[in-house]
Length: 218
Length: 218
Ligand SMILES: Nc1nc2c(ncn2[C@@H]2O[C@H](COP(=O)(O)OP(=O)(O)OP(=O)(O)O)[C@@H](O)[C@H]2O)c(=O)[nH]1
Ligand SMILES: Nc1nc2c(ncn2[C@@H]2O[C@H](COP(=O)(O)OP(=O)(O)OP(=O)(O)O)[C@@H](O)[C@H]2O)c(=O)[nH]1
Ligand SMILES: [Mg+2]
Ligand SMILES: [Mg+2]
Ligand SMILES: [Zn+2]
Ligand SMILES: [Zn+2]
Image (cartoon, each protein chain N blue to C red):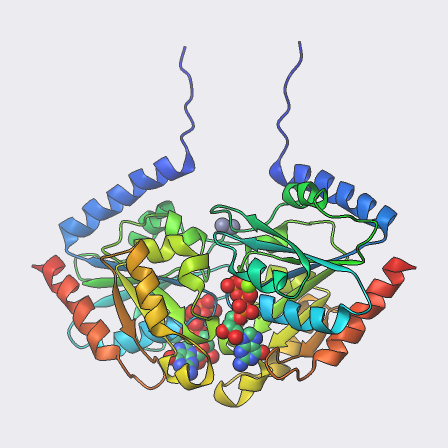
């Protein structure tokens, strides 16, 4: 007799994530997963990066949201292909959704895909999406103890962006405290002080991302 | 033969939530569940409320966090009984945890228990904890589209607190836009403009909470 095996959600997620990786490697596409709290500045940062990158690269975006398409409309107005993924209540994006969405894009033409994950410091970090880069945003008004209280995402990030850095004078935020703690949970992560409003600090992050993109497209 | 029935997590949660309600009604304790994004100001608000309420009422706190006990230490330093609940990765608090924690408190002596839920706009709203009041915090730096993108919590809240209201001059936040949208998803919720830093607007929220507490203690 055949016994039906229902696999653990995370194991199944890993398979999908591996399929995504193969497909992106074959097509030379760099996938960047942007995560952070609600309102940390995921959309604002992606928009600023797109403005600087779009003359050199073909870019597409997957916008994850529980509901609505506010952020997808903002991306669309830049003339960039975007798919709105509504999770209808789910607190994170799974690889299966990304694998299905890749079918909407012409991967041979695309160089970079940004994923804006659901605003959540907890669950998105558990789901590998086959990405080349994990960018974790922590915004100054959230406070400097977030890497301690919500460690998983920050421990897996390739880049940690301290966004809304233009607000440093208005909050008691110890950016060196964050840097020091981050080193204890993630010795590899690069930290960037950025304002998506004024553009401050954006170039360093841009260089970091372009290095990764160039390696992938080679 | 006996068939073991494993019930849905939400159904089991409802049973626990009902047990909590009975126990709190019997002991005349008012339970307040405070929810919001990471860093929205849950701890800051709870601390300001405690300062104003602690001479009149016996108060206890349950601090929910993925990891660490930073917030519990802050509450403890006010001389308030506090239990730190570490969810070890889970993105929300379930009623079972609260039911078990109630055993640590002398419910006959206590008037008010605050729960600080995990910083998350998504999942905590799905889990009833037997509470008398759901307080949802939205902080100004998060942006004025959060009730649209993360509707569930705001649709269930009794009070929506626009916290960090002292930051209104620094962000383009349409508070009337939020109020208008909130009415379409929750006609009952009261909205409060508060700064947990300057104390602005705290008294109106305090009156609202005290009304509820007094009814419960009668
Ligand atoms: N001062 C300042 N405000 C910023 C910055 N980046 C974003 N904001 C503001 O922060 C709010 C949220 O920005 P979004 O880019 O929508 O944040 P998000 O993470 O995409 O939010 P969700 O998708 O709703 O979870 C908006 O009011 C932005 O204008 C920044 O660097 N500085
Ligand atoms: N300007 C201003 N800052 C505030 C206000 N309330 C809280 N903060 C700041 O916001 C940051 C986060 O505040 P917390 O009270 O720790 O927020 P929280 O929601 O408990 O955060 P987590 O428990 O880590 O999810 C801290 O730096 C606070 O000082 C406010 O009303 N105005
Ligand atoms: Mg966004
Ligand atoms: Mg807190
Ligand atoms: Zn979750
Ligand atoms: Zn969740």
